[in-house]
Image (cartoon, rainbow, N blue to C red):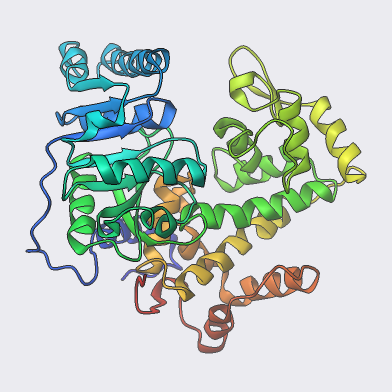
Length: 431
């Protein structure tokens, strides 16, 4: 293992971390894999369409299912445009566009998935909808088919429980845009069979993804840590720090997008419905004004014709009205400490709960899925560069004024022993 305190070794560390992520503890290399000759995708929207391209691009036939013809046509049109754009940029020959599109078998009924070896659900992020889909798949899918959900945060054990074959159910959490982003969180549920895990890992490699095996918990690894960051960013807004000032601090740190830039890109209405009152009333108010992010031309920011983000007087007014806070300033380094150090603490909680195999897997997730700056090596690597004492001091201060924050006992142990974050060993993934 290289020394994470030396910046010159960050590239070596990341290569080692990426290599380690493929090693699944407790599964023999010679375990027979399930044969994947046809993949079914439920949903032809942004996620489903992007997911499907990973398989069509390597010649695996895809059955793409939607509920309405216009949605199916729109999805296929977007897929073709994506392939055509890549061909026009010289990434592959023009004839490859038709070759890839010929891998698709469009359908309007789940029964078309009966001959698929792997079925990936990519419908709306709603537990009741997903349960309904899996209940139907249980009756339709052939014996031995892998049933996967693309949920980004929901309880996969609960989804698997509506089937008579929970051993066949797994989470395959692709990141948007799924045809571009390299990360794939493979989520092992309580009853997921070893050969389903092994087959999913091999398939991830075949389609060019960087895979990490994680356990079931709210948000899994990546989004769970993201939630901790967003919680602090939102608290700063309530203290009078504007979203663009927070994002600017993250940009200076090395992120191409800060928390609110990322929210606008993803869409503020993810998990939101008209009239809803969520834990984030600022987001609710923006969505009610149809300021739902880049896709509507406005979110936390205003956007010009080239999608350049511009600080918004409308958003600033909403923030002042809802929070009652006066405009405040905070040094960029203090903003980063306030938002990033709780990410470290949440990563430690994930390790405590054995929801990931090793600390370096957390760094693989954040480097490949969330744009963590390469020169800072990942959440765990960065924690070693600033030291456990600083992390503990910041977390103790935050916890003193917020009863919802729990300082990880692992953090106190690291301070006491002088051990490194990247060397933490809690015994690996347990379900």
